[in-house]
Length: 431
Ligand code: 4AD
Ligand code: MG
Image (cartoon, rainbow, N blue to C red; front, side, top):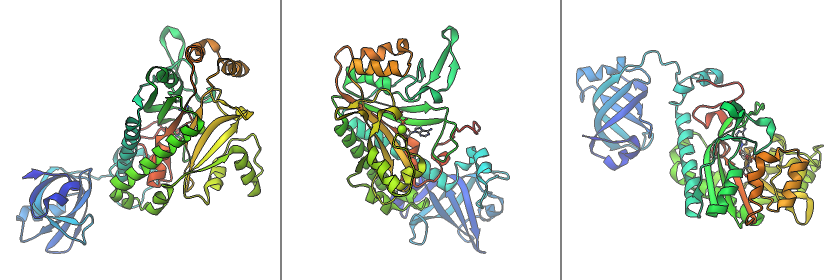
């Protein structure tokens, strides 16, 4: 008898199959009982009829506890009333192991308890639905990049210096060389990569010693940095928009069941698949003030500001042309106004906040050098980075997507801790 995954039972209507998985739940009504099982690919209802199985199998009902591991054999048949549209009429149940006192029941639990038991919480339906969407988002991003001429270029995680400012660096003792720092973003290394390969990306964990205790911050998260030679600000935004719309379509196509489990309003995602909006930072400040905010003209946008800015927008909004003082040293000055830089943040709708940070990079040696001196940066450590402006410098741009932020938005998950298998925050390092 074929071992099949629950997601594939639709191809086995009227056939006998073997399913392997875990008990999710069970319900009883006299001469019949229902076994709800899951196997990582989906969930299915098994029907156990007194007259169709052995006495022993029928009485498994009393023994099978939630999360017990089982192998079930039976007949697949379509049933419209059943979740997923198919049922299995059980012939036999082989117990692999009986789970004793599984701590997470189907009732409500507090979040701290669930996070302490994250290794088990992962088995709950909303959790695996989110993680499957994460899988789709991850591969959609890489598919888009692979189809558009970007080479994967793995940047190092142990680095001698900062990419995104020194305030959020984690340091680790490094032999005789003093301290190494965990990478905040591979961007600077990718800038070396494009001078060799033209277009490159990396995709891996990055680290920020963020003290923020918000629903959008982790200390270890996954970032995709992309970088492209001869691409300027305008085209940079175009690539980002295409990529994000590609991801939206992939999730809608590949995860309808997961979106349903999560009760995600998919109309919101469909509406976001349209030309993105663009405003300058100055326009954003003016808009926020018109809404009663007293935000300073030289200010970064807070979570509340991001919500206000996207309140009436079904599509993400690029906020571009920022005051240079509040953005990173590597961003290129705007030719039209040297106080501004050609950076853009992409703000997701529905209150999900910033999902991308990117910019055109300063490619002029002197301007970059002056800015680094003004910021008191340790020039020796960045000599190699300045070199890139000495030997065949070219206009170039790039951006970084926070994978968890994007998955939060796609899946409609309020808190970032649920979109990564094991979240790391200032207050949590376990399990
Ligand atoms: O805006 P950020 O800091 O940009 C960079 O690091 C650039 N070097 C990227 C580049 O141009 N290649 O970070 C990029 C994205 C943010 O937009 C956000 O989505 C996410 O990373 N991010 C975080 N996600 C979770 N927890 C945190 N603490 C995050 N900090 C940034
Ligand atoms: Mg940013």
